[in-house]
Every structure is written in structure tokens, then in C-alpha cells.
Image (cartoon, rainbow, N blue to C red; front, side, top):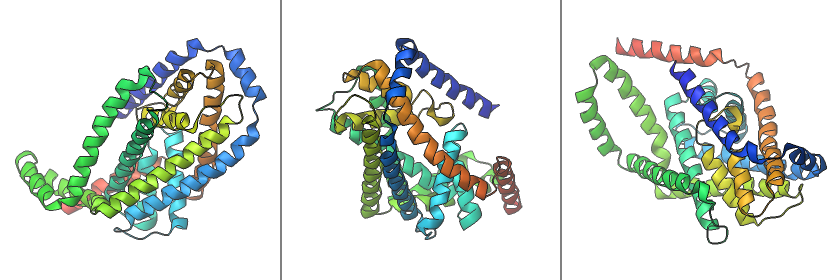
Length: 337
């Protein structure tokens, strides 16, 4: 019931974003712009995007290296499977899927790898905020998104500070966890949570030094600059032009919005902010919609096809994740006994 409730919330949020933007569009004009676009510009954009995907793979390899050094050629398919899961299944299920596949292929505990995935999302959010704030002096923030940016800025800064503190001061965290668990958790539950806590803390060790934090953040900047370059290439397929800083702002706002629950493939949460950002900088709304829909498809289709191929090659099914959860619970019961 909880899963269905979360899915329903995601669908409602997607429907809300679609409701905000759809009535203001004249669909025949959107279709006409789509028909006259020069789609050859998508090809170099896709090439740059996959370079960014290799950079993402390197970043995850760097964050996992204290658990196990994994060659990029073995890790790249796992990253693509994660994207496939995010694009096809609801509730960002791809993050759990890639951790499960990594456990099956490389014997890295899911709790530890999920900790690194959470850190990836936090650093991605920080880079998105960096893009927004760098663009503000030259491309002012559309009023509709001001509150969202403020809220996410506060939450991401708090989360970053907490996780860095946990990685740098593990003894203090252990003391606090032990004090809290002793008072709140029954003995049988404590055996399981202690194991989960230890594995999660192992995943956070990629933040144990300032150099590692800078390396992860710097790689994240490169990743998202490459994605913005794809925005720039796809823009040339349509008869309008905005500055690269506006595209950085659009990239930041769009991806901050996609952190919200939504339908699979970020329907609505990607398109609404993208259209409104371009419209705020003088792009005709129907033309902005044509570009945003094309960009969304260009981001969604290639990596979903590649990830779907690797998903099929691994002979994965959705039932595998339920089985993995049950096996994990059975192992915990044995440990408790």
C-alpha cells in the first residue's frame, strides 16, 4: 500500500506540472515546430551525453574504490541499468536496481553502495544549485521557481554537512547511534540495524578526506557541463538561441524539479520547468515546448535503450528485487538467531 501511495503521489505531481503548462500551449504550433526541426543536431548531443555517462561511471568507481576497485568497463553497464530503471520504473527504482546488480556481480553490500548513490544525488543537487547561482547575475531566476530553489538549497546544504560530518567523525556518530539505538530499539531489531549502520557508514568513507570531496564535486561539475552541452547542441535544431548560461540555469531548474516524485521518465517535472525557463528569456512558448519535448526524448531514449540491453543481458526481472529483499531478511534472521 505504501508503494502504491508513493506511485500515486508521483503521478499526481506529474499531472500537476502538465496541468500548469499544457493549457498555455497551442498544440498545432508545437507540432509544426517539431516537424521543421533539424534533428541531425541531436547526434553530437548524444555523443557528448555518453561521454558524461562515462564520467559518471568514473565518479562511482572513485566512490566505491575503498569497498572494491571495479574496472570502468564492468561498472558502465551497471550505471546504464540504473538509468534504465529510473526511466522505466517509478520512484527512482533504478538506484536500488543498480545497487542490487552491483551486489550480484561484485559482492558489494547493497546498503554500502546505496550510501554512495545517495551521495551522488546530493553532489548532483549541489552542482545544479551552483549552475543556478552562477547564472543569476546574467539570467535572473523565473519567479515561479524561487521558492523551490530556496527550499532545496537549504535541504541540500544540511544534508551535505551531515554526511560529511558522519564520514569525518565516525566515532562520534557511532557513539550517538549506540546511545539512540540502546534506548529506542529492541534487541532483535538492534542486531539488524547495527549491521545496516556499519555497511552504510562504509559507503560514506568516500567523503573521509577533503581531497576526495573535491574530486567528487569536480567530476560532478564536468558531468553536468557535458549535459548542458547536449542542451546547446539540441537547441541548434530549432530557430531560437539563448546563452549557455540560460541553458545552465534551465539544466539546474529542470533537474532540481526531477528530484520530486513523478511518473516514470520524469514526465511533467522535466518539461514544465524547461518550458517556463525558456519562455522567461524570450523564447516563444510553443517553440520552447517543442525544444523541451525533443530534449527530453533525446535524454531518455538512447540511455534507456542501452540500459535496457544490459538489463536484458543480465537476465533481470522485477521479481529479482523482491527475492533479494527476502533473501536479505532471511540472512538477518539467521544472524539474529
